[in-house]
Every structure is written in C-alpha cells, then in structure tokens.
Length: 118
Image (tube, rainbow, N blue to C red; front, side, top):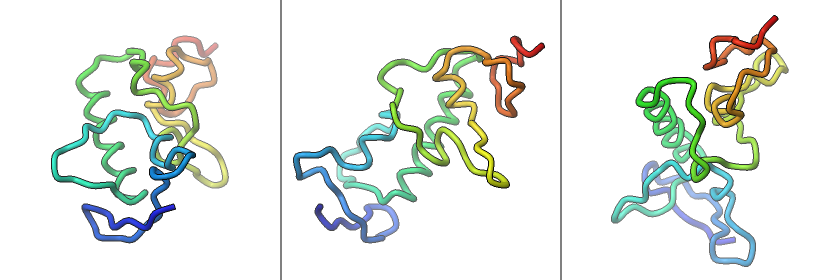
C-alpha cells in the first residue's frame, strides 16, 4: 500500500494501485472521468463524486434504462449501491438499474414503477 493525499480534501489514505492486487477504488463503477492534473481521491471524496455522476446519469437517461456494462461494478458499495437504515439494507436506484428490472419487492427506490409488485 502507498500513502496518498486526496487531491480534493487533502486527507491521507492508502492506495493499493502500485501492488499486485487492485486498489480499493477499482470496486467503484467507472463512471468518473479522469481529469488532467488530478490525482487519487480519498474514499469519502470518491464516493461523493461517483454519487454525483450516478445522479447525473440517472437524470439524463429515462428510466428504466439498463446501466452500460462499463459502469457496472461487481461488489456492492455502501452509499453507492445501498445504505443502511435502522439496520436494514436499502438499495439505491443505481443498484436497481444495474439489475435491469423490477424484482417485485416494492423497493423504495425502484426506478421501474413497481411493475412486478403483486
């Protein structure tokens, strides 16, 4: 692991990109463009940036829209795919868009209008 300083907030964090295993940030959806002159972001700043890009994507693409493969991440990430409320996992609209259809469970953030709920 390499110690890095966040290019936005200045927080110090560990980066694993210089080793044989991928860094923690590769678990995030690749929805954030890399900008010139900007280095790595800490987990908090990267989460906020990815959330903003996801919200932009969802607003610009009418629902229901399947999320393109290049934006899909395989591991669930708290505050991106879900959040915890009163000990329960609440899945985000982004998670449901990655699924591609309504699961029928009357989820709070269902972007499909609960079309499969009985």
